[in-house]
Image (tube, rainbow, N blue to C red; front, top):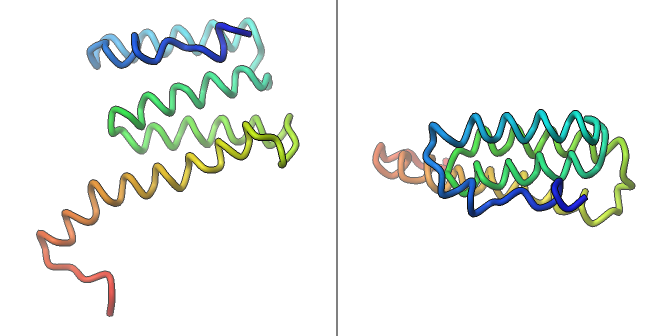
Length: 116
């Protein structure tokens, strides 16, 4: 259980981009084999990978992992479970971060108004 819920975020974040993907893929394969792809701890590991992508500013990949996690949690956890609620909160927060870092500067640069 410790392995699945404590992927070393700091170690992964300190790796270069070319090191991150192979390590992430290896962790994902190992956990899927050990726990199974419908295990809540596997879902937690996917959420953690999404958080790493979020911190790296790779929002599309972060959302992909948050959605993978959400699908598993929706199946195996109650809707009132705190982990499921946390995952559901990550999705709009990541979308908001993405928009504020990409859309708003773009819209200001090109003088696009969000209001009609």
